Image 1 (cartoon, rainbow, N blue to C red):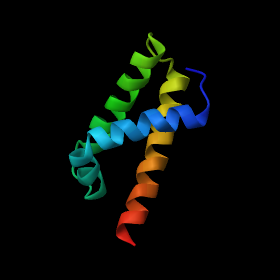
Image 2: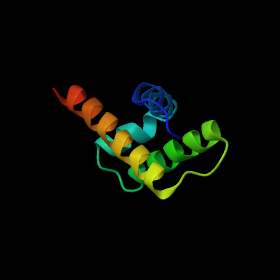
Image 3: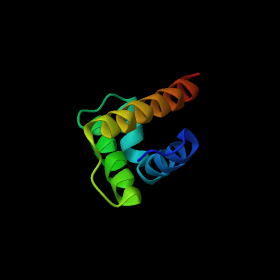
Image 4: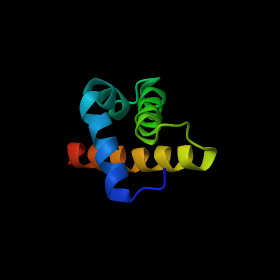
Length: 78
């Protein structure tokens, strides 16, 4: 899963777009929203890679997903 940030971001933006209801839930701090989105992000990366992610890869995916969601939330609230 050693891919450029742009490629990872594109994949994660797709996860965000496909799960808007959970993104709204995350913004509203609904329990389980983050876990769902983090899981979908890892699954999307796993499918693209064609193999399970390593622990460091998962952490990168979670970190980047959190960053993207935070930017989206901050843009939505303003």
